[in-house]
Amino acid sequence: MKVYFSTVLRLNGPGGNGSLRAVAFDAAGMVSTVGCRGASGVAARQPVKLSTARRKLETRSQKLAGAALGLERGRGMSRCLMVDIGAGTMDVLCFDEETGLHVKAVARSPVLEIAERAAALPGSLLVTGREMGGGRLASVLRKRLGDSEVVMTESASMTVHHDVERARSMGIRVVGDEEAEELKAGGRFSHLHLEDLSRDRLERLVTGLGVPFDFDVMGVCAQDHGTPPRGVSHLDYRHRLFQEVLDSEALPHALLFADHEVPSTFNRLCSIAESAEDFPASEVYVMDSGMAAILGAAMDLEAQASERCIVLDVATSHTVAAALMGIEIAGFFEYHTNDITLDRLETLLVDLAEGRLSHQQILSEGGHGAYVRKRLGYKAVECIVATGPRRGLVAPSGLPIVWGAPFGDNMMTGTVGLLQAIRLRKGLEPILVV
Image (cartoon, rainbow, N blue to C red; front, side, top):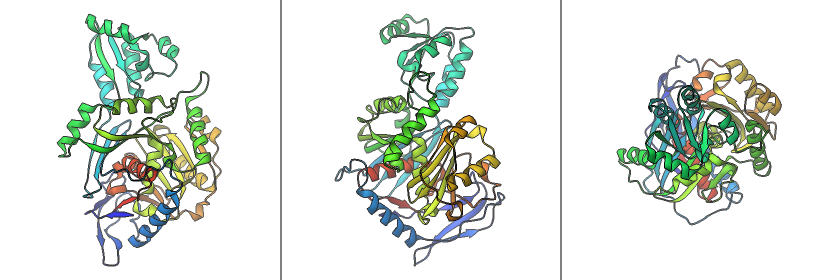
């Protein structure tokens, strides 16, 4: 296992704005914290023995190395670019294994940028490109259809709905690529190109951080519901896809794919992999963002010192929680963040540990669903590690919540999960940054 030390100044609050906490290391490898209780009322972490976290991580690494998907030993991944595309932010982590240097940025999500660009364009719209995260864009297009024409290529229309007839029923005219090129040349339409992954934007961002835009490995995560058969709920379909994979290998990185092996049903991840072909990276991997968040939160130092824990990521649009034994998934659930209350979330977390969640019940409430393999027992849970930009939801909770910070940064949860998933896939040692 590789351990990198960084100077850490934690803010003991859900959004990083509670009480100041300094982290220090003594000669015995004891991580200790100094500071006062924040306004959130959540207790500060207890000291964590770094040697304990290191030993447990080494043991897990040895056990997982043989079970990792398609090990690719001997292939270098010194210079890494990890990108987590969410509904509110795009989180970027550049990591150099040779130096241990990690440089990071949190930018506005392309989902927001594209929607705002669409709203600002005048007149009728011609929309080309690939499927991307499109909740906000769909709302903009519905409004535009009231007084203007909207034309989309079939590949771009997947952003609105995977059933092209549903897009047409909204009033959108769906055309082939050749006709779209003719319409574009005619000049009557404002043109909008869709993609989650823009090389120009990321290159400006990364080089602006002083990092050369050239990588051994690139990883990208985003949420993908899969492309369900007609008449099948996209939420239920996503659950089935995950269950099929996790029933045979209950590890988050089982849902990591190299660019050439992404199942076609994950159309958004396929689109991202196609966009990544334009990037200067020797290898490209894509992953569902929920699974990346689970693995990233599991790399928090507090989680690493625990045999059994719950990780909770409260993101801009979706909330995911998983009961873990090491990094093995005992169960998880997904919910829409806007629809969940603190009381309901606390009940879900306890029920998750007790193994009594019902997938159909979560669906009936408007959530994404639940998956349960094993019962941990709530009394056996050593900590609940909370990450995500909206984790302030659990600040008043009476549950044993600790504020997670994988690689020292709550906002890097998805990117750290990506990095660790790729390393596990390649049979490389996990990296712990404290």
